[in-house]
Image (cartoon, rainbow, N blue to C red; front, side, top):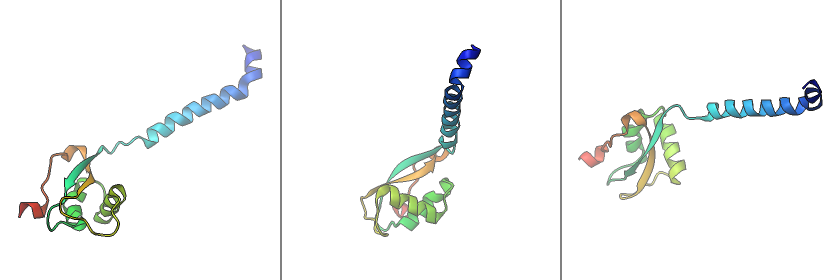
Length: 106
């Protein structure tokens, strides 16, 4: 056993460190914030800011971060969204019930 250790100690250490690093990284990058996603249909009079005011409190994002997230993940350029568009927004799992937008309630 000692001869085996002397001959392959660097390889054994390298493989062990690789496995430990992979385990630590998988824990680190695993999402514990329980973010879920909801698809919202844009109504007449809605804007990204109105949607952010309704939904941004359900996640840990500020209104500005929420709008940036929505633009990036829905490939929206500028501020224009149109009635009938469907956009994906982040919400927490605890509040995954459907919430109506302010303009939809009018």
